[in-house]
Length: 291
Image (cartoon, rainbow, N blue to C red; front, side, top):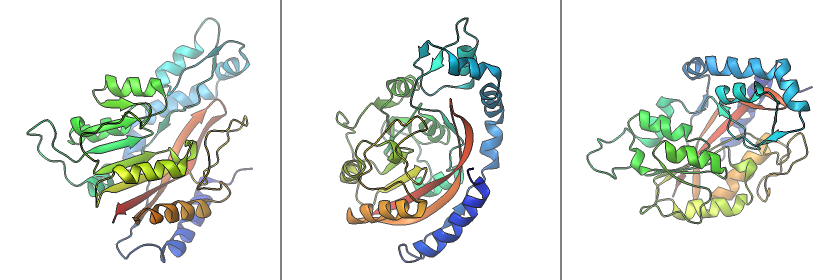
């Protein structure tokens, strides 16, 4: 039986404090993210999804022969799917995540205050890998940051289409990426445990990041590369997937080799759902600064 989120979180915070003392400067802050405002904002959506996932409709989806390949489902889309005359089974591998771990205060602290948008490109330049539907980019734009200086990358074509529909630049991989300027901040959002080449991604990201730039790595640790059906997602050439602290240390060491310095560790929670059900998992954000 899986241990409760609270017990895992308490143990992890205590161990993080001990382990990272030797890895980071005095400026490091350990923050436990409750983010009640964010939970309140999406409470209705969360209840709607949970109700569907716990209903007989979900059983019909699971037992259906016909498969429907939809990614990043919203509650409305999930409702439509379950109410089809011939129930279809969800086949997408990119599940929708809610409750961003970084609240507005933390985002402003990382990015600085938004600048007046007097011309098309007034920074900071922001790149997000694992951007999904563009949820974080939309949030940053609402906070006053310049959407013209944001780029989202996701392996899901559905996600990238929605990023573009929201008015941002979007790509399905890094190869065609032409920013016109090196990013000031790169977000790796729930990407590291689905990556086809962790080490290569770190090297490419650090290579394009501006000097003194910031890398924000948010994800679930340990980085387990397989789901409950045995599907393998990535190539764990940095992490091992056995232990939370071990994987975090491996990521810190690899980025340290690339001249990135760990500045902050943030511990919070994230709601994830798939056909296996919905659960709240401990989530971690590591903030690095380029030397």
